[in-house]
Length: 393
Image 1: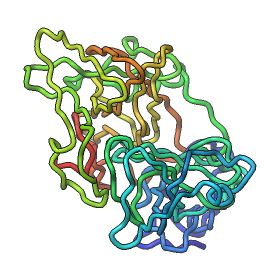
Image 2 (image 1 turned 90 degrees about the vertical axis):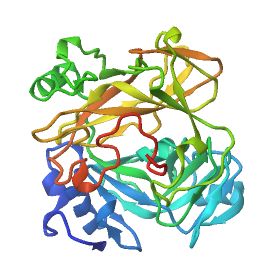
Image 3 (image 1 turned 30 degrees about the vertical axis):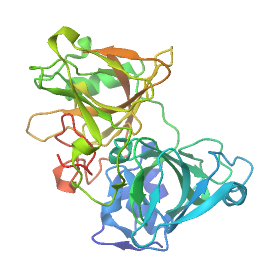
Image 4 (image 1 turned 120 degrees about the horizontal axis):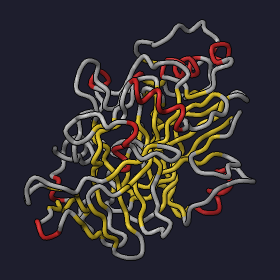
């Protein structure tokens, strides 16, 4: 059994697989806690209640990391076997932590380990704050052949690959940069016929004024499409932030600490630019959706990285919306999505209202007992164009 510090969310005498029988979908926080009590996820250091998000578990960095020559997937080997061949040097993450240099590749063992039943698999994704400082992170496991996917019945350790793209960062033991979601059985992404009755009951997309967008006016093809906001009420309104190429180290343990202008260039549009912005190749931008998004408590959404067929643009590293994102009981609904954007080989023009990403929807096995919002101190529930939590807002 795995200890959990602080108050529990569910009775410990329940059997997880019995509860899940006949119910495919994502496990809510109370079921994830039960999985921890039953040893399905475990650690030598007690899990804290703060790690349990509405439908995911925050994963903690271990005591040391490895600077490696290149990224890899182990497939026919353990990760430890590959590390013996590819490690350049170790980074001590204890105490004050260690610095990860921009553009270098690191692999850090995570504290949590898995003992998944055959009926359960996992998916991982960066936390929102991780993606917003342009850190490319993904999880690998022993004999794994795909990033960020934990096979059915996996037993063993997890490792986090980290590539800081824009800024050098300082990290330390116990920091949480990624999340793990548990899924019982395979389930299909919700299609138009399944989304429509959900949408009619509780609209998902709202215009910038907070008015629900009718379902008939929503662009849908395998999910709901979301566009970018570039129209402004005045020429001094910031529509995007561009990462500066030379900056000091960001200590990821310091919240609301750094001056934004030391790291970011704010971008405003003049009237003659006609709500259009030319993005520079391989530069990193923070931008905002035109629509406001509302995810009801028994639903979750994943923002799929949108790449036009030309392959010129990538949007969104994190891309996961918890149940309750933008949802307020008895209040105004909807919160902007903040998107991480990086154009590739050539300058790329984007304009107000241009399609930027797609929301895929899936169901949760049961309504989470904790939903995204102020009650669990979520950082971005009321965001507009918002930088990562490390910067003064």
